[in-house]
Image (cartoon, rainbow, N blue to C red):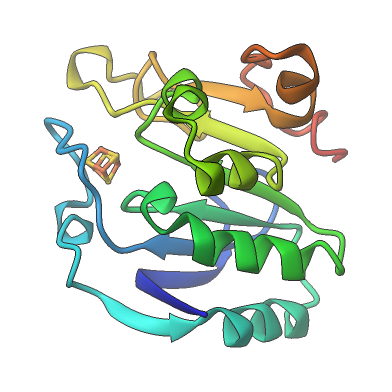
Length: 173
Ligand code: SF4
């Protein structure tokens, strides 16, 4: 399956705990004021990669602690990220996914692919970047409105289960 990306970083230490393989989706419709990645907005920017080759690349990298989907807006290409997440299920890695939507917006959209992707990730970091709430002290987030959500308990409790700011215990470090 094809995925349009702005870029891939193979060993990031800033997009979640540990060394992470980060896939930056190309295309974003949120237009947050003060966005740090405006080059990721155009739906026809970036370049196209094959999801199978991304997973092969991840499998070859023995040093990563997990995978992060970032952007851009990953949920605009939910099908391709579902394909990656399903293939990764076999190698048992944890997945963090960023989105400019809120958890509630994604659930209420009733779009099958968006809800399916939510069920395949471990952690959602949600909400747009709000410049007025900018906080450089927050781990893994840019503004105070953004939440770190444990997806497995959220789906079983039918509400966003927000975790404390430290992701390490949740992901087993
Ligand atoms: S969701 Fe992220 S990439 Fe999209 S406009 Fe907001 S800050 Fe920028």
